[in-house]
Each structure stands twice: as structure tokens, then as C-alpha cells.
Image (cartoon, rainbow, N blue to C red; front, side, top):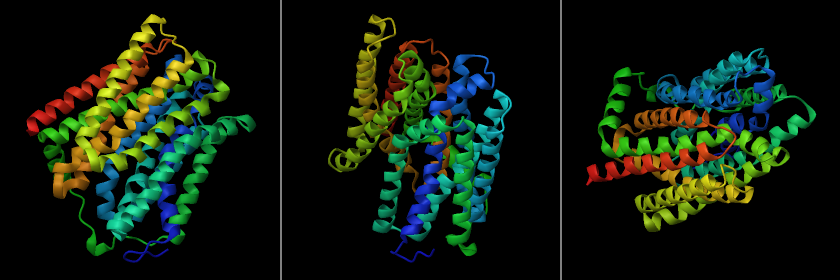
Length: 399
């Protein structure tokens, strides 16, 4: 599968889309099953099921920090093969888990491995294209990235109709094997030996120092972590919320898909609005909308003892995730804007840092779930206010 300058094969685009989709598939497909998994493997507490999601993100956070610089040193294909090896190992551990602890270790390893195809495949695109050609590839990849969360829970629900939850992990293993064979047999290495750079801990430390010292990079990394934290909290509690609290087990995948559509619509709209209004203005109003919506929903939740009508919960989450869809891309772009020549290293540092914040914040809030929406509403409001404080601090320091 060759790609010349300005010409990229359709096969290469589909392969990159598949490699990127592995992360979303590995999270969203299994959401309908996490209650069964936790119960059958003897989880001590009903909220422990959330660790099946957060352990995957924890592994991915570590992988985010490692695979990008590693692929610059050893090449793109070897780095992806190593990641797929870890992904396969983690999938096997989950498939044959005999305890809840074994499941969590497997998910961590799976997440660590999944970070590689997602990060390194984008580097492959950058190696072989630029400008309009790269934009074309990334446009298709983002389309797939937006479609997967809409469809994946339905796929998981369909699997559960004909088999048990272990079949989902067998599917993950098969997906990794297909991606690895396809990459090995059909894709050439995009980073020749003469363009590789030695792996340098000093360069990584220098990039981390610059991110930590720059108010814009640091402020928006913190804000990204807060917004992403609310999303992780939702992912961890969504099955409990819809399937159990509101008795929507059969329609859980439908609800999840509707909220994923909100994020997809926001990303599409953002591409049109950002050139007219600018990243900062658009993000500022999206964040304020997020906070106001969350505060109003918190008040409504308090008046209904934590059980607001399902239509109100659905309306709130759709509007909230629409705001989040406007924030995700813009916040990342603003954080990396001042990093210049070290953008690649800075992206790894900022990505790992925001993910770490999100896992801790989202995980802690999720563990407060008590059969009502109050922890979710309070957590979303609090994290929105923290994001506002971080961005206002960054903008004042920038000025």
C-alpha cells in the first residue's frame, strides 16, 4: 500500500480509520455488559464496575506518553506492533478472567496497548502527506471516530443477545489481529531510518517543563482534564444510570448513541464556526453554557430528590455534550498553540496530563454514585467551574 506525495490510497485511509477506532470500540462496545461482568467476577461494590472503564483509560494515559516518542525512534510499524501485542495480551486476560482484579489488570494492559495504534497512525498520516491531503485523510478518520460511539454500544448489546460478555473481548482480540495482519502485509514503513531520532528522556523532560511553565499550555491542559473528567464520570456511570436507575436496559445503546450524536454535531459545527468567531470566543461561551446548564440541572435534581424525569436528564445530557464537543478540539489546539517546534512532545505531555486529571476527577465523582443523579450533576457543575478558573487564569497570564 504505497502513498506518494499528495496521493494517498483509499486502503491506507481505511487502515488508519480502523487503528483509530480501536480505542472507542474497546470502551463503548462493552458498556452494556459492565454490570454483568462486575457481578459474575465478584466485584465488591456496585460502583466497582466503573473501574472497568477507568483502568482502560489509565493504561491509555501511560501509553500516550510513551508511544509517540518511541515511534520517532524505532519506526511507526514496530511501535504499532508492540502496542497491538499488549492489546492482544490484555484482551486475552479479560477474556479468560476468573476474578475482578484480573479483569482490571487486563483492561489496563489493553488500554496501554490501544494507545499505540491511535497515536502512531496519525504520525503515519503526517509522514506521508501534508496540507489538503492530510486534511482529507483526517476528515475521514474523524468521521469514523464520531460514528463509532454511536454504533458501538448497539454492537455490544447485540452480542449479549446471542452470547455472554466474554464474546465481546474475543471480538476485540480479533479486531487487533486483523489490524496487525493488515498493517504487516499491506502497509510499508512511513518513517525511514535516516529520518528517525533517538529516544531522549531529556527531550521529554524539557517538553514537560515547558508545558508546566507556560500559563496557556498548563491552564488549558487543566481545563481539558476537567471537561474530559466529566465525560469519564458519565461513561463509568451511564450503565447504572440508564439501565438500572431509569430502567432503560433495552434502550441503553439508543440513549448512548443519541448523546454521541450531540458531540458529533458539535464537532462538525465547530469546524464552521471557529474561523468566524475564533477558538477562544467559541470555547468561552461553550464553557459558560456547560456551567449554566449543569447548575440548572443540579437545582432541578435537588428538587426531585435526585430523580428528575428521564426527558429532562436526556435533554440536559444532549445539550451538555454538545457544549463539550465544542470544547474538546479547541482546548487541545489552544494548549498546543504556543509550543511551536516541540508540538509533538508537548501533545504527548498535555494528553497524558489531561487524561490523568480526568481519570482521578471522573473516577472519584463516579464512585459517589448513590442511585441518584445528584453526584453526576454536582460533579459536572464543579468540574465546569474548575475549567473556567483554569482558563481565566491562563488568559490573564497570557495578557
